Length: 273
Image (cartoon, rainbow, N blue to C red; front, side, top):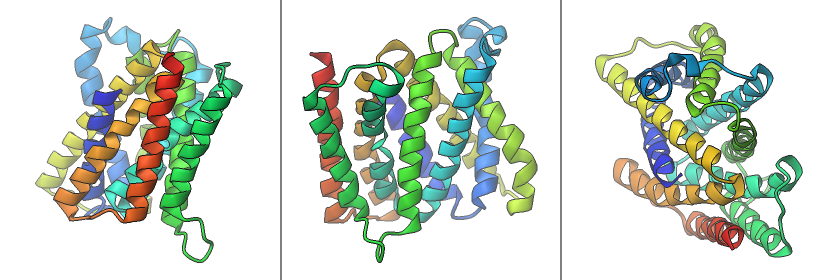
């Protein structure tokens, strides 16, 4: 989960870079095509290409829907917000996972864990500052992405007992391609330059590799245990945002991110006891 989160943050940085020159829909669509490359490279080492086929279509489709909405919201959010702020808000998703796990996964949550979850939500509120006069639509999109990401991770955990990690990633990626590819030209399309193709290739490989690692983590461990380790990506989000775009996080973002990270790490510690 730690490695997957680091790779995913690097992927987010490349996505943000691409959305400065190309429409969100185009980046989202072409990147997902290149996700198939790491899947094709990994498949021979994980049981062959037959393992890409789903064992249970309905749950795979449900996971694909949440993957679709999460990816779309993330791509839009990254085009609107500084990387560190976007990553900080989206990484409230482990808090959502912990809150939803008792209802959807049957995992027990103690009073101490509920208090920890509340601390995480306070961190989100500090970052977004939900004042109708000042709260931006970008912050709402980021929160929606976090919630959708949590639902995606919960479904991933449920179906990982019967579906391989590569099958889960492959089915979700194909679902996005089937919907996004026909729609992208109508939503805005710019001729891609050679450097753009190179970045899209890197974007797809990073995205596919990151999601494979995260799916593997959710298959091997309880969702409420492994999800909080996503918070290690907050460090990379701040560093990449500062180095590449010169974005200095505001005190509100830093304070909220610290609370969210404390909440997530505390959830992991309490669950392991």
